[in-house]
Image 1 (cartoon, rainbow, N blue to C red):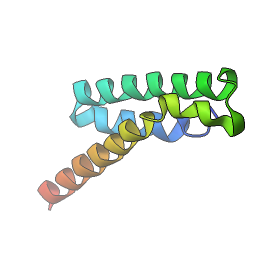
Image 2 (image 1 turned 90 degrees about the vertical axis):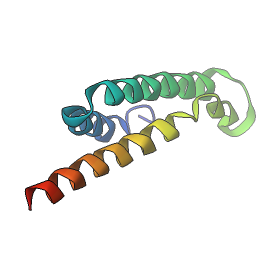
Image 3 (image 1 turned 45 degrees about the horizontal axis):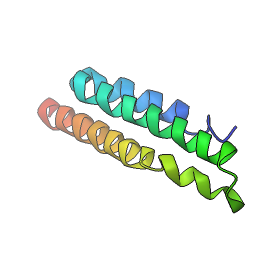
Image 4 (image 1 turned 180 degrees about the vertical axis):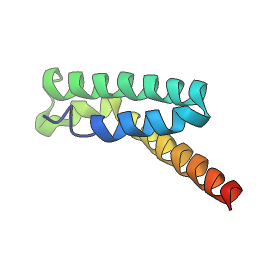
Length: 83
């Protein structure tokens, strides 16, 4: 369940950002998937106390933040050009 909790919003972010910036959204989405996979692996198999192995893939948060920013920028730019 931990692996899937951010996936729906990230898929939506990739979709919306990809309408305006398809290559950048694809790259950030790929980084997010890689980071989440390493996060899951570290969380389950690291053997470190209290799930500290999840830090292996914590860079997925940077990709997710970049997707939020890219989506917000693209939507704001479209709204400004609309008015």
